[in-house]
Structures are given as C-alpha cells and as structure tokens.
Image 1 (cartoon, rainbow, N blue to C red):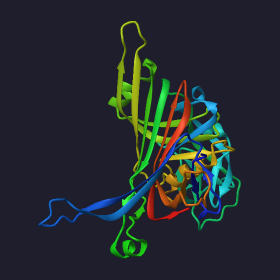
Image 2: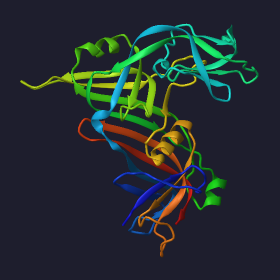
Image 3: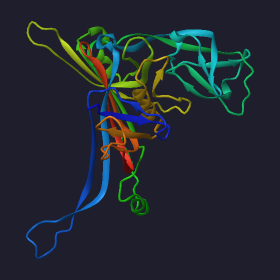
Image 4: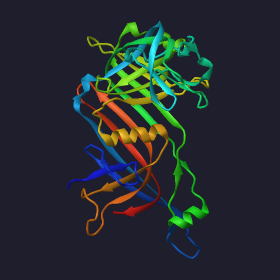
Length: 348
C-alpha cells in the first residue's frame, strides 16, 4: 500500500508528502485509576487523549558525501557594499560571499550615501540583512560598511546530526477539553538546536582551545553542498573527544550547542535559507513551521488516499516538535520529523 504522511500550511487546500521510508500515527489516552473497594481487579478510565505523527524525509538526488559543515575564519572589512530590498524594509547585501558578518565590528548603513544606521531596528549577521524602522522612508540606494567572514570546512567530518527540537506546551483547559471531546491542545514552546560532528581528528581545528575559551562560532550546515538550502547559527562547543585503536586513524566527535547573544539588534540566531532549492516541499514546510513557531495540518494515510471505506487515516492540527537532520559520508541526508497533534483528530 502507498502509505503517506502529509503536511499542509493552507488549512488542507494543498498537501505535501514527506519523502521518507516510514511513518507512524500514535494515539493514546491518559489512564485514570478508578479502582474501588470490594473489587479484586484494578480499573482505569480513559482521560485526556494525546496523539502524534512521525515520519522521515530524504533529501533525494544527493549523496551524503556532498554535505559541507562550514565554520568562519578571520573577518575582512568591506566598504560601500550594495544591498537590495528583500521585502518590507529589509535589505540584503548583494554579494553572496559576504553575507556572514562579524557582530563584534561596527556596522554602518547608508541610504543615498547618508549614514542612517540609527534607523536600523535589527541586523541579521548570519545572512547579511538589515531592517529599517517601519516609520523610516528609504530613498535608496542602500549600501553598507561591514566586516565579513569567509568560510571553510569544519574539521574532517564523516557524519553529522543537526538536532532541532521544540518543547510543546500543554495548554488544555476544562472548556477546551469539554468542547473537543477530551483531546489535549498545545502551543509552541522553547526551541533547542544542537550539532554533532564526527570524523577524523584534525589538530588544526583546535577544538580544545575553542572549548577552553568558550569561543562563539558561526557554523553553516549545507546538506548538499550547493548552497540551495543552508542553515546557519551561533554556536559554542560543549564537549569534544578523540579516540583511536592501534594502527587506526584518530577519530574525534565535536558537540556544539546554540548560543543566543544578548543583543537586541540581532534578528537571527539560527535559521534556514532556501534559494531555488530542490529540497522536497514537505520538508521545507516542516522546517519553516518549526522555525516560525507556527502549526501545520498533518494527515496520516495508511492506504495512501483519503476517503477509504472504512476510513483508515487521521488528520488534525500539528506542531513540529522535532525535525532532526542526519547525514553521513556513505549515506543520504535524512530528516526525521515528529508532529505533535493538538486538539481533535478527524478520520479521513
């Protein structure tokens, strides 16, 4: 049977299938103990019901060895770099090789050759963007003086895991549960990002020094090495370790956790950017929902199509609680998604 797990970000008008090898629907009620005296068996009543969906999504068409895990090096000063309007009042530097900025250096933004840095309300140091205050009218052209980073491969990796999770907050109350038949409801909670890189030990990385000095690192994850879908974030090394058998290569594992700088001007601490990407649409929808803390509609269809007799599928509102990406030198890049259901399910 053509089993599918699908997501929709337009209330079910269009559905997109996760291109993975497996999927599951989990549905369970909280047992409430109602055992009474005079009986020799324990008894339970079904309380609030919670449900979720899980599935995988392959980045098809690209072998795992193409992936690049990049780190930034030393910064170079740039002056008068041209910027182009992205949307609203947000402008992005034109040169794609100069879009990672040094946040410790001074950024000066010009509108029609006049310094209007004071009218900038946030700066995206990871993707080279600035946003002007809504009350400010831009004349143009917009240019910028900024220090930019080049990138290079981080170590000699052979596999990686990018973990992106969100802890859903249970906001069920009496009125809601009574109205929806006793189903749990959720809203988006705290998000966590971590990166693990395993491979051949590379002394030039000097991970021990980065760990010792608590250095902030900007890291880029490019799953297929083309720049069509990339993730960037501020990280710090949390632990490093190396090992090796006699006569074998020395291996190293590096674990990094997301670092959130205390700077009100910083608009982005971790994000994905898609540019004419071939990433499957369903995966992109899931990543965007996780990143923007918005819900989707999800549906699980064991037979591949809705409307079977009898109905065998389930559909409802979901929050992306996990969208982990794993890759290896000899495998493929694979996303693993967990979708936390919220409210009533509909059999489809």
